[in-house]
Length: 177
Image (tube, rainbow, N blue to C red; front, top):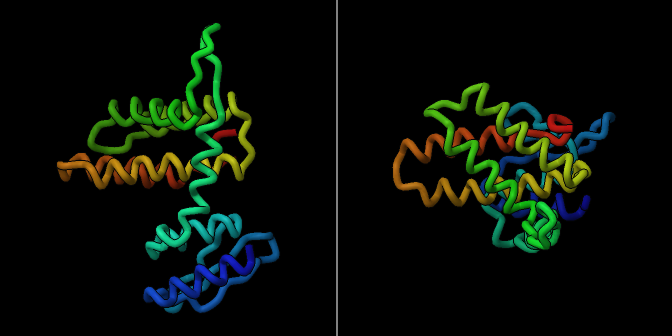
């Protein structure tokens, strides 16, 4: 992954990124230094790679990194009330998040945040996801709500979705264990 991060940084620079360098900190975090800004610390190289890919619109070039994650979570299944009816984890999470979003007011209240945490905790508990699996799972959810932002017709709805999306991005695996 070291070479992948370097490759992505090089392509981001071609798109105008002012990334000076990156390195691994003593506590294992990936640090990216950007000209004129404070260093950005990421929990892992995966997080740094994902952030740069999305920040500099390199998704089309690295779509293969995300397709395997999407397929993996479509394959995870859960049995419901004795029936052989199977529902993907992603679909279940999207459904739960849609309910939370549907009940959201104009602002992202503490109550809404708690409900989102509870929904994700429930799914995480049933699937027993590792931090890396949760990160991939979270990216699938983020992509879904990012698409909804693009599709939203009203400014109010877009702002609500953007607040919801920002909060969803901030959640880490350790928050919902």
